[in-house]
View 1 (cartoon, one colour):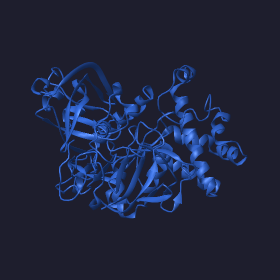
View 2: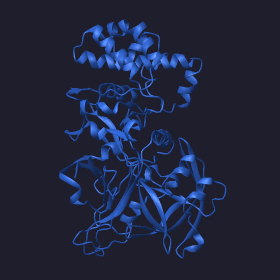
View 3: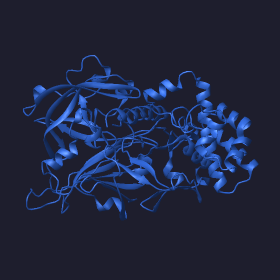
View 4: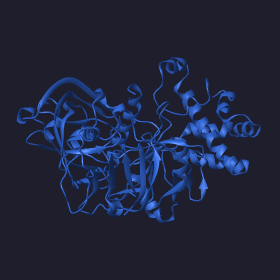
Length: 506
């Protein structure tokens, strides 16, 4: 289950066939909330908690011309939050929601929410006003990094565009424990992930649509408009795609793990140099509720160093390079396996790879680590990162002194604790492209596409679109392709054939 309140867009297909009514194009327009650094930090913390938390649990259409899709227009708030409107109940009560492929539940504030400030700033669902309401009452709670929402399940009709989804289970939130919800431009969230990560095992809205025969093609697609001055922030189409929003053909890759929209990604190239990290394949997910493109700290640090982004200087990292750099080099040259280097140096008490990620520990790991100080853990993590960096440079036949100097520079590019890195707005034109290999094809992000800008003139701040996010197995390591990637690339979520498609956005 993921949650994040930044960039989002959504699409829906419903084709005509003899067994179902002839439905037309229904658009949900997206609006987008302006970008600011605090929003990115809060939202990233929440998404991190959601990915980690997943370890514990795992319409009626109308015609628009000759099209056969149901489209939801999306609002664009400065490349930071995409949101659109749905209706719940009969007659429909309207709510602004984030369309989030990183979670699977639908929730909105309840009229029974009395003690949370956030509920007083947003529309609340009133079951007594709906003739199609059915009580369920089962309690529910979703925890995020900066707070949580809790409430109970109810059932009612849900309007998405002109589709009417009957008897949809959703959560009435009676408590919203975060300032993030107070400031949010949206009332609730509509999850577009799989049922496997749904709280209470509730059926996702898109799945109910398919089960009720509202869609003759089991697909929805996103177009995110990165032009913050445009009236339309993007569109979500259920049941198909809008050909006006992409160029060429989509490249499709299979879903490798249901829950999130997860697939296998290939090599990552900075400029013309391969990082080598994903040559054998890396797990990645597409998340419309995430603004940045995130990945393991080790590799994101290399990317941010290459583009000139600055984070927080890591004293432990520099200490490892200074005191153990030569030994790390010698051990790698002698053929010691990378995951054993730090163990042989005595910096990692157990398995050398154990401390690379900062994700959730199992009870056994937690108990095993007792007795080792936080400083020891930090040195182990720094050592493991240094080994990965050194190994990558060895593949490029770099000289020892030059490699150690490069690793020392990477220490200075480590992201801040919440993963974000600041960059000089005047240097964007000189930054390299970053390429992600998907389905054996290159998907290029230019500096203009991966840099997020807030403010104007001397108040302008530029933020790297690459954020660090470390997740422990079995969820991680994991790359999350958020709106930084979905903006340049129109994305199709095909739940009929369990595949994801990417094409250049128009």
